[in-house]
Amino acid sequence: MNLSLKNKRAIVCGSTDGIGKEIAIKLSEQNANVTLLARNEKKLNNVLSLLDTSKKQKHDFIVSDFNNPDLLEKKINDYINDGNKPEILINNTGGPPPGKIIEAKKEDFDKYISMHLHCSHILVKALAPFMKKSEFGRIINIISISVKAPIQNLGVSNTIRWGMASWSKTLSFELGKFGITVNNILPGFTLTNRLKSLMKNRSEINKISIKSIENEYKKNIPAERFALPEEIASAVCFLCSREASYINGINLPIDGGYSGSL
Image (cartoon, rainbow, N blue to C red; front, side):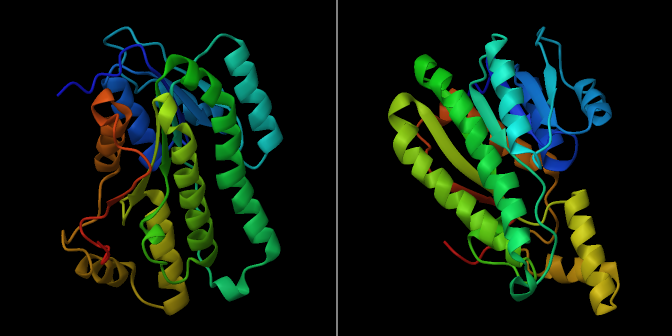
């Protein structure tokens, strides 16, 4: 099986940490030219130094903040106008903090709808014309296993993730005939700073140890462990390849069997 992405350029959002960082590294190992996109230039430079260049790939980065959609739109349009032609887009950004949905404010929904849905849509609108012209495109959204069933105390996150999944499925209907696939990755409990932060928050609220929370989570996962970010990244690489050209509009759980749904 040939998963090589030689001569393909991929934009990876949220690529300075966790799953996004591992996706960028794995794509570079598959010969892709990688464009990192995040807000911290120092961290971007650090990740840039980790990308594989053994096949003379050319990597770069865009500094932008998903809290500022107008700036993102300007940055991505400037990037394309400079002659760059990305054919792969990995939409990935930090999730909303924990909390009950009944306690959420309108501003909480506005902020994360903008960060996730609006910013992803801006990027797709900018890249889709070139993808259509080249008759090849891969749009992959890193969402959450909560698309299958809401997770308690993640009220805003559950809501936003479902919105992203529906947006993505609708895009897959519209773009499939152009050789563009649109798919969602649904990570389960993955060993990232995000998961550590969620466990710490729950530990402080419920006055129980982080180790107890970790053991409780693992009891509900048939694999009895958390995923590693690189395991999520490996699935992304496959969906980006030509080998996955007839996989379109799916939600792919990577959760060790956690989800009870088929």
